[in-house]
Each structure stands twice: as C-alpha cells, then as structure tokens.
Length: 107
Length: 119
Image (tube, helix red, strand yellow):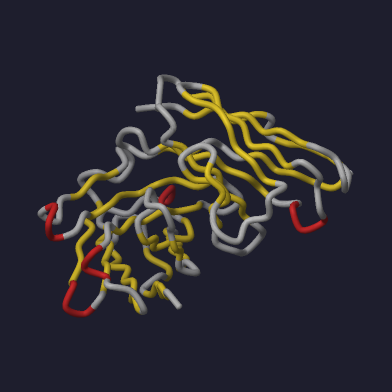
C-alpha cells in the first residue's frame, strides 16, 4: 500500500498568511493526487484534482503542485472560512489512501 | 443538482451485520464508479471500497481493513449503492459516506450515515 505522510498535522496561522501543507507518498504516484477540505460536521469537499487543477468554484488563493512523491497545497492568503482540516488523497494504485490530515486553526 | 443520500446506519453489536444504502439522483448513476469512505469519530478519512460500472463488469476494490467482511453492490435500475457490512468490529464505528467517483474530475459526497458498533 502507498502511505501518504502529511505535514504538519497541526498549523496555527493568521488571516492573510500564506500557508503550505505537504504530502509525501511512499512511492511515486505520478500526479494522481487530490486535496480536500473538511469543516466540522460536514462532508469533505475537493479543492484540487490531479495535483494542480483547481476544482470549479474553488477560490484561486488555493493552489497545488508537485509530482512523483512530494506534493504541496498552498493557500496564498488565508481567509476566515479556510480554517478547517485538509487531506491529501492518492489514487495511483489501490487501495486509495489518504494523509492523516492537517488541522488549520486561527492563531 | 447531484444528490447522494445515505441511510441504514445505527447501533449494532460487535459481530453483527448492517446494510447501508445510498440513493443517487440527478445524474446517470449507471455511468459512474461509486465509492464508500468512512471517518471514525475524531479521526481522519479512510477509503472503504469501490464498485465500477457495468462496462467494467461491476468489479470491486476494498481496503484491507474491510476485505472479506464488507461487500459493495449496486442496482442501476434504482440508482442505488449498497454496503453490506458483516462481522462488524468496534473499530468500524464511523460516519460512512457515499461518493460518486472519488477519483473522477468532479466528485460528489453524501451527508454520511453514522454506524456505531458497541455492546
């Protein structure tokens, strides 16, 4: 199985900050990676597909990059509604696996 | 608007069985792969399994943690997805989400149904 290691697990930041979340895959996954945002009590919503493609309706302050084994999600200027938990997901091979999550909180 | 509505969750004893359903609407259900994803209380997301569409012979994939105990099926005539869960363990306690093609260009999630395995 491909292990997805996400860092940091917890991140405290302020409105307007630029933040980066990293996901490392235990083996190469090409660009078969997505990023999800989840708010308490809600289903996750996908922000990015295929590493760097913004899902329709997602603000342009979100961006994704990477390939192979290292991937990043960047939020260029944090907004109050961005405080949530973020997950990466690989679908290069079965089983589909996810990172353990990054909880982003207001400083 | 695409809608996925899960049902069938509840309290079940360890070793018991439960069948979850997911009713789909506003898209051509038979065209899509369908997935189940779960989330234990206060924990991260875990993919449970997938069923492909008819052109791909309705084949299935499962996470190791549920393989041999859970079975995913579908009924394209009624736009329904199912998750049969047998030999349930306390660690299967989670919110279970039905997802339209988790790896497609656009995915859709249901609101989830809570399964609690406890004596």
